[in-house]
Image (cartoon, rainbow, N blue to C red; front, side, top):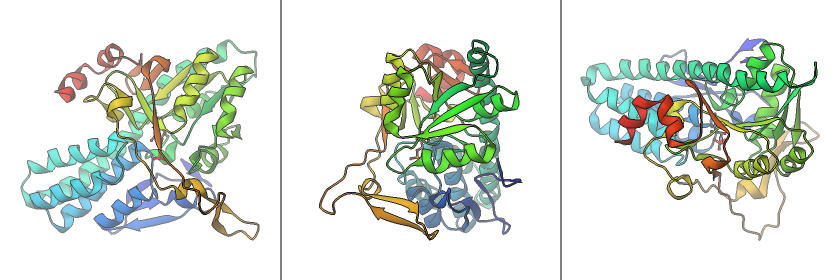
Length: 369
Ligand SMILES: CSC[C@@H](O)[C@@H](O)C(=O)COP(=O)(O)O
């Protein structure tokens, strides 16, 4: 998407043809910093410490990490080691394993001399594919927004609530949950987005709000606890969120707090949609609550918050007593029964084994095996 009239993706190959350049999201919305990363350790740090984040972008970054390693050492051992090193950086988003498997499956079959070039080509392809998947998600999601808009008075906006950041910063471009919103804007449908701040790391306040402002989307930042109230008062027409892993039965794992939004949506008859590219479906698991590993992050993310002070310096401050321990489960699971529909690149599926298998008959069988 554009930042001050210049088009950016979140990640791209550096000029040296070996490293990657990526937007270091820890500094947004205050500073747009681009870092060049040229080692596997650097890629692992960028994913673990959330310079990059969001399930699809984590996958693409890991794919480039494999390519960087292959340029140094294209052996089978190096391939297995880089798979392990990167796989353990973030446990919940399945796109990470999907991308690592895609790279390893391709490279294993090739002679060592061909692996580096093939790895960079495949990583670039995965990045381009992500952009196309998100465009398609946007086209299918637009249809839902159109239907809601048709029931509104002329000029009245469709009010959409979103949680965390499933925007272009979480992907290579466009985003998943935000793609239908951008498509609606392009078509001239008035929209307004309620942006959950998304404690503890504030991806909503820092990233989604920055994206919305940058693209001129009318939006309002709200605290995470406001969603239920807004829905009770008819102020939300639909919820769209992203996901880090969706099971073959349609359970949806996403940023902590998503489940509570889905409960409030159900109680208030507000449609609750999840936007996802197919690499986010884990066909090997069915019960999300029991089977999806939930990342537990440092309690410091809860006790300390980042912000910009009056002098313009970006810094961290403590908001709780030094002696108080903090727990920090980073994701939760929304059971399929609370999900109105899954917006995928192939269309909208009901959140169920049947719904997903109908849209992805090829993947449902092959990947579950
Ligand atoms: C299209 S991104 C979908 C999800 O990855 C997103 O909603 C999310 O929860 C991101 O979590 P994060 O911890 O910031 O990586």
